[in-house]
Length: 71
Ligand SMILES: [Zn+2]
Image 1 (cartoon, rainbow, N blue to C red):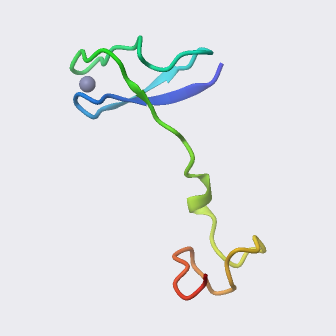
Image 2 (image 1 turned 180 degrees about the vertical axis):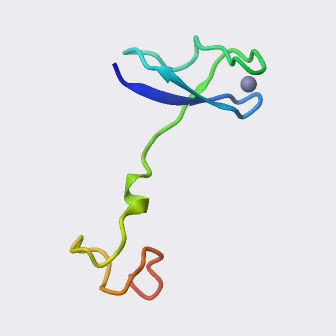
C-alpha cells in the first residue's frame, strides 16, 4: 500500500498517511487542528535533484541544475 503525504489546508501541517485506493484525503482529519479534509501532496520533485550534463539530453555540460544559459 503506497504512502502519501497529505497537507492540511487549515494549518498547513503535512502528515504522512497510508493511501488507500480511491482515497483523496477528504475523509482524513488533521491531527493538529482537526480540520476535516486534507489535500494529497503530489510527490513529483524527483527531477529537481538531477544535475545537468549527465546525458539527459536536456541540459548542456556545465549546467549545474539552474539551467542558466543552458536552454
Ligand atoms: Zn490542520
